[in-house]
Image 1 (tube, one colour):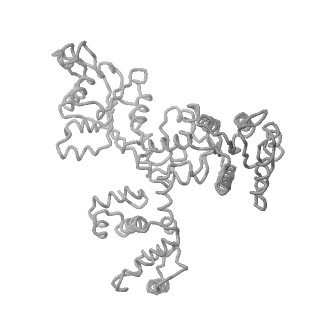
Image 2 (cartoon, rainbow, N blue to C red):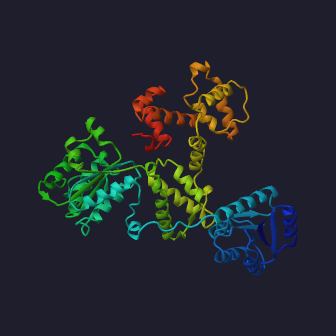
Image 3 (tube, rainbow, N blue to C red):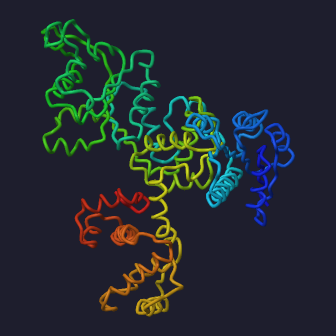
Length: 516
């Protein structure tokens, strides 16, 4: 039986609580002051505390502050008849689970207590992630033990031992700049400057001046001579991020620097010589840009001496726990306190397809640390769109681990079931069977019974959206049927290859299914 401690100096409120929770599975204990409540906590060991704010002696806010010192994970709900904006803000700052105004609505009170007790149960089952990384991993921030990351680490080591130009490719948010910094920090140039410039963030008319500098009077606003990044980075490393967005005129000058290390400031005829290592990065397929004449072919080959490809997070899900460990320690070090995370929450993070990659994961964890009401991050602390995305995909994913109806007997049973108007025993495995090749529309003569059966399954599963679930399953099965050949899979589905690739990205279908 779970224990609830009420701290309130009003006898009527204590009586009301006894009436409300009489006959329930909750064991109610009461205290008439903050001091008495603090003495009871070690003896009673409550699962939840509800405390009034205005009381003689210790008020509710000070009581909450001291409860936090006794047990940081114990959820506390504050109550008051004198609600003010500042009081509510202060209560949440101190870590209250929630804030309730008197007189309270009884059904809402019961629901709030139930939610808080569930959060307490989940928190008790949660332990802080044990350190899984070496100290130098936390310092560098390049995290991963997956096969794609091991290849990245090997290339970092090889590049660090040379001055070769490197091109880092990958989707936005995969950590390309961190890899560039890691190459620099392990190279012989580590004691010299490292500078990063985002070629997509600077207007075209200013990018050339930013890179190469300018003379006084070279253009309107050039009131003094200014050295560019190449001069400032002499003997060091220059990181050119999003180089695929660099304008053609600037590409030509970059090519010259790569070839012989020379350039002129804007508005000058004096040739300058520099020794700068260039590491470039892009989230665009430069080969396609070259084919479209949007990027210089000779510059591409100059940059693409050693390529480091950063795999998207959905292809390295085994690294998510390591990254969560890293980010929670990083965020905790910023003054938010160390947070633990529930196993169910980790499972949700591992099941999500992360279109924004590592940057999105970091932002989600930062949000969760802010909105979590206890010492642990629980499922409901994650953004609703992530929970909805994972939950909508779960029934179909779960069914894939179950045996499909491939035997003649099971196929016959399935065909018979399709002709039945209603089948109350229909469950998730029926989706696998319904989508399996044992059912041929040419044999059944009509696909409508199959559609109706899918709708019945969706209702029994709590209103699951049929179209996304079936669409994802069809894409997976088409790729399996064609051994991962996207051209053939697209023909089988009756869509273009471009549409198929969008579906693969949308549903987070991983490389294990031979998707390339």
